[in-house]
Image (cartoon, rainbow, N blue to C red; front, side, top):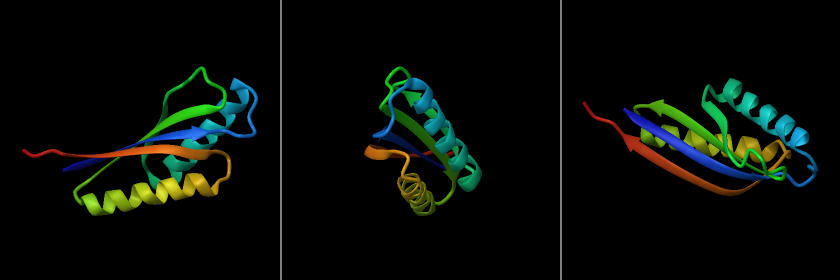
Length: 97
């Protein structure tokens, strides 16, 4: 079993409040969850209004497929034009019996 985890740091250019940030982050998280069937949540920087960190996790048995899926999720978020991805970190965890 393989677990693929990504931490994406987002910069929200046109945002000026925590309320606006919550709206953007909630929208992105829900879209990723529904479109890609991935676990997704805001994981850090809750009190910063122009920066957000989102965690995404996928489970499967093919690391290459999971990596491709994370790339698709990253591209999807960028193509929404709601936030800029300024940093990303991906890890694969291999679990055996």
